[in-house]
Length: 270
Image (tube, rainbow, N blue to C red; front, side, top):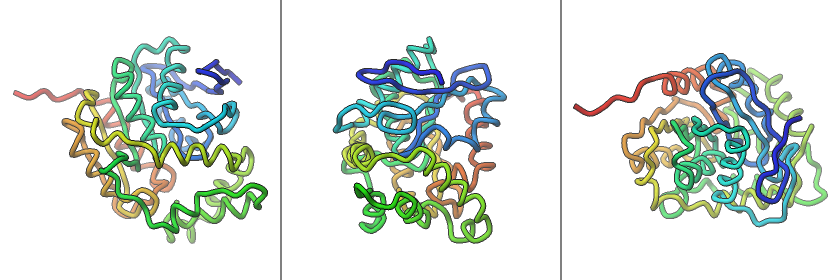
């Protein structure tokens, strides 16, 4: 599997398709297999780049603590390794926070920006209920499968869990195939909790799509509204009833909105 030496650790990645680069950034504890619903569609028009964040999947786990700024520098290092001068950048959840920092710290690397089911950090963030946040804390030595299944009700809608049990089992299988350690998860979770881009969002110059579901229990939808209000010219799309993992449960609608945005020409003011 291809890898690059990011700052202080080895990062594993894949590329698919061809065309303008499109970098996909995972969420908390996830590896690049999370993009199984996006890669086939996106690779028809773009060079899709997926990778494992520090502390997840096939990438190394350098000592923490981690920050979204640091993880954004990792992503930028990957683009440099691939000689991708400018790329579309799409991040979900924690990945959306990292994507904000990519746009802020490395603006010349970003063509268009897609922020999905994410939060701005700082005073602009609305946190989930305490029991939701607590469910994502892993305990050393605990049953991994039990911990994965514990978060499922917060990630998927009740109807989807009932009608598509095979997809839920596939999600669990993927998480168990390359589980994140309790320590790595804690470092990534701390990066998410410590994210603070709210006061800087207005300086993002990349054309931006903000997309979320109004059924999100992990990152309340109001966060996306606030992000869209603070990034100049940002487009906001709300998928009715969609949960936190809208890119999986609502993949068709999600992919359609993202593709339409990425392929559109920027409208200029008269």
